[in-house]
Length: 171
Image (cartoon, rainbow, N blue to C red; front, side):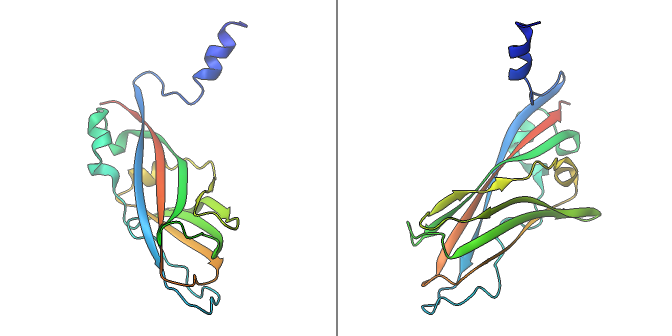
């Protein structure tokens, strides 16, 4: 049993027999309007590219001999915010941020959040351990954001890079 335990621990989270695991990457961007007075953000903009997501046409499903309706489990494995313009500017104008997922007929749930430290231009969010299989299988789903902070001094583009790990039954 002692020799078997390390092998069992290594396979925790591995797909079962007849299943395959793979990652899907997607990203979105958001434009924050600059304001030299740096007043409070009155509206926290959403990230373009995260509305009405439909993974049915993602090549990763075909490459792994499965379809989105065969998803057994889907979990966010990484969500990173980074300033892409002006390159190297800090994210510190954002104080807090939260990402939620929703789909028709399903509740909206929090999937990630962060308090952004000063001086960083990229930051990995803390992920909630939510199984998102029902959202991936839906006709479409959306990822929305809310947050607090102040306006950056000049127009700033922030990108959100998301990786979702999928476990699906093979066809």
